[in-house]
Length: 558
Image 1 (cartoon, one colour):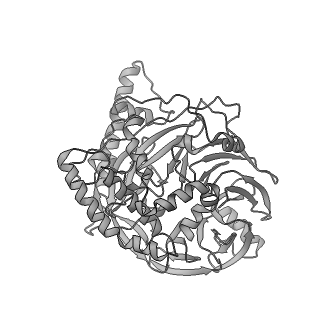
Image 2 (tube, one colour):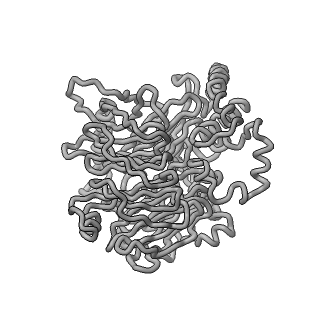
Image 3 (cartoon, rainbow, N blue to C red):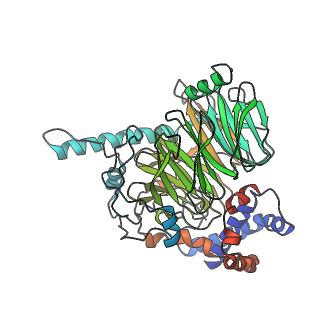
């Protein structure tokens, strides 16, 4: 078992090396051993599968045992901070709130104290009931009967939805043009915009799967993209004497610039120098509009869409800001060390962001070092978190309570991003042990597993975008080593899809586990590559110098 874990650790290190641009001869030698290590791991797994059912080992899929992992994390102190004025429609505000711990105090204390972890020991039906939106109401003279009838109706609807997605067909088209990893994708109408480590931003015409524009201007790898809504584009176009139909895209780069591109004319119309490598950004469509950026050093900054001047700079996180998303007037930032901050945009020309909550990696359960890459997707009072593990975390950002949603049946699975579209939660997952990649679909808001989509030679998915056409057809874009457009095909048509939909019975299970039952998932990374023991010791002893700010960006863009 120990050797299995060491092999898993080595494969994880190799996969992380492969996303670097510059490799030393020693690193190239390690990468060349990947096939050999996978073969040895498969042999050990086969041996173990004959002796016992071992949680977290990928062997014969039919013999594996998998448990759905859903656990509660520490609670938090009562809040004295009023909630934000607006949240996503359809989600009700939580009645229980928590007090935010300032970032400075977080650094002094090392994170939130643990206050009594609760164990969920309900049955599967109760899990579904617990996950439903709190606005579900029951009426009638016989509440118990009405509730049971409603549960039956919801179960029938879920069964129908699951059957529909198990028969889904997609046509895949490869977009060729980038010569390095694609780090970010955005969809705008019939266009897809991609940013890459090759320093370019490319615009693609989806119906024809052709490159429309090549936007060169950054001198460093492009790390993030964001698309302002049409009304804000029209306002900027008017100030620049451009067509009112002009659409703009924002790009952030390791060269410390945020650039604003006019897609129709294919030119950069504005450059903002941030003094820091830009690792995340989003557009907040409130009042005159704001650009929110995150830096490699953990800084969060706000910029006016009207004047493009800096409104605020905050040392918000200890490590690189790896994800920023907005939801109404709220802004969510996630960092490499696993921390999540929630901000309220007060729509001011000076210091518009006010910290509502800050949850450390200890609370979110996404800690593990500054080399991590947390991505987040907010929905009402919940935030879905992906942190390169076999699971997704669901953070209730007002209370600090968390749940774990299994996204792969083995600890060798890694989830690099998470996305919502319509009533779907999509969790891409890549298996380090065998190189297989899948898209796992869950229903919202219940977070119940629907099906898994895969295709031959599927690459690791680092970023994701989705939209729905006027006729209700799903179109998705996945980015990583390849950029692939997914177009949903009618089920009644004769055309065969390029994607295989399969139901993973192990993910279909919804049994609950206590925290102690899932320790293997976190312990894997504790095993050092024996070829790197000295290097690992030096890294731990040097502390901030070796693992300080900038480590995540060096890992991705070095």
